[in-house]
Image 1 (cartoon, rainbow, N blue to C red):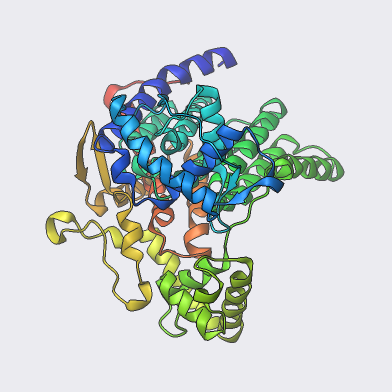
Image 2 (image 1 turned 135 degrees about the vertical axis):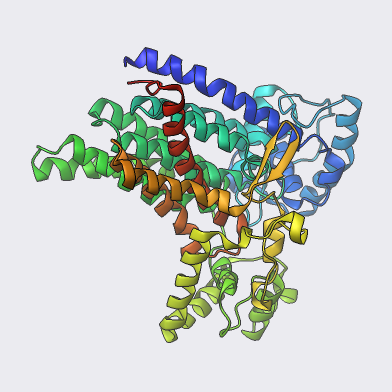
Length: 502
């Protein structure tokens, strides 16, 4: 299929599915207003930084003040007082992310930066959006991940059509466009966790390209640039997104070696080095960014640690710091580079002195992520759609499963329903059963796509923690990919027709 026809067909299929995702998201967020976002610290701090940069037109990092500075606190307080009333006066709807509200220019405002423990991307992209829209748009920061999802959905559809899996691609997009978990995570006020999900989804078109019809040099390099930009922008907004850069690099290297199968080892090595440089190049020009890591590692071990005192709780982490002679009351309530060093020493000490303990935790994490057993309870039976913490070390894990609806909840125009976990498991079970029975053509390609995504989705929950439920549930997209392939075959037999493309 020629490129122009492929692109136009991909647009015709993806556009209504993106519209469905938008309609479902709007229905899920219809009760939003800025007053009930009052407890979302990160939303208001992001908005403060975005407004300060928009008002001053200054991105100079050397001149920025801290979000905890008295001046920044006054701006934040004024925004919390003015924005909700301005939104009500102008009858702003939660899905109208493009609409701005009239506010007088802020006096005595200075460029502001977020605290060490937060990512700056959402705030800074919002300031650019305000500049483009010509005013402050209160709901724009919450919709940024959804806007980034639009080109990604189009890319997934292009690659699906290219390798003859158009129906499967459409089913998959339809499933995630109906996933309450996915849509609420994209628009989560608490954090920009939606960018982590988008980074995971980047693996889907890359694997379709890599394992589909023989890749071409002409197609490889634009995809490498696209993957680099999308992954680094996502990382700028949500640091954990960087974990998908190595899987993306592996997929692109496999595509390169398929293209250059008959080339000399020297040529392949040079091209591989250039490809890796393309992938990491955006980091060289991206704004400086720091985010705490080791405190998350220390707390994260609380998911299955029952011996060394790790707890998924900021309060218990502060107690650990006090035990080490670092008083949080004396030095401030937020994580710093100094506290990072303390937690790094504590974590590495436990790993070195008791490697068998850590190996057991890794096994538990792999099992918990692949089975998603915490989603087994249903609201009809227990009132919860997830398994509540069973041990004090799990701390506030249930909070993170409460931020958005769980991955077994689907929605259609405001109506939501919980699917039993066995129905999600049916996707991979049926995929394997059909493949083994019929030995269908394309099984190897499909298995490679599924395996690539599954391996990438395992990295975060296994290497860091399963306690941060949003990232752990990304693995359920593996079930949806399997279900899309099974559904594609079923529809092909039902209507006795070929795939969307031969």
